[in-house]
Length: 191
Image (cartoon, rainbow, N blue to C red; front, side, top):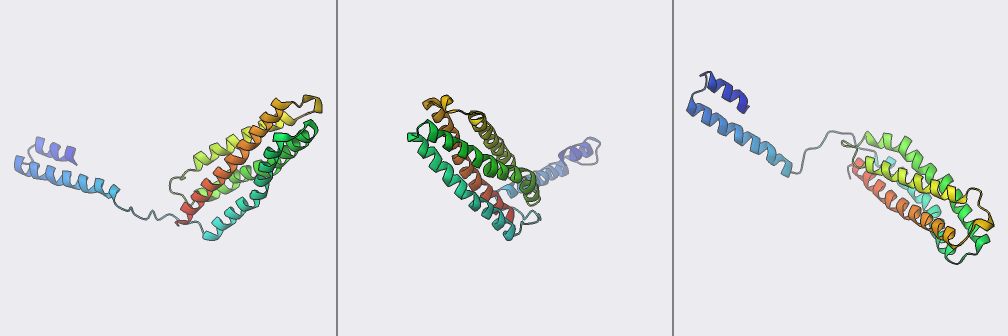
């Protein structure tokens, strides 16, 4: 708007006094527009996710609680496990993570997130959530490598501690990740 007013003034269609007043009006309009950022904001007109859909997604997380609790128990039991018991625990954790945790995260990435994205004007945090899925999958791969072809002769205190750290990391990361996802679901419902 200022450039247009200057062009009119340059060719003589806008006298100096009118130009000065026009510039003041333009400045006030720009300031008022900028002040809108301090306000409560407008409703985006975007669709809201039905609360029942958010409830269903939260229930998926609740179903995972048993697996996460079991991972915590396994990590704690590894503190005092002998080689044979540690082998059994590590293999159980690997199975639990592969079949429940990783599958859940894949479902979120390829099924849930595309559906939820429709209700978010700015994909509100889904990029960070996808990064968490990659980290969970990476940790699961590390545990799988640790347990693939595992024999009792392979098991020592260092292998047990490595497995324990991976299990603890996955369990903690998934709990935090689930809480963050639930915040996103709440945002998508407009609550």
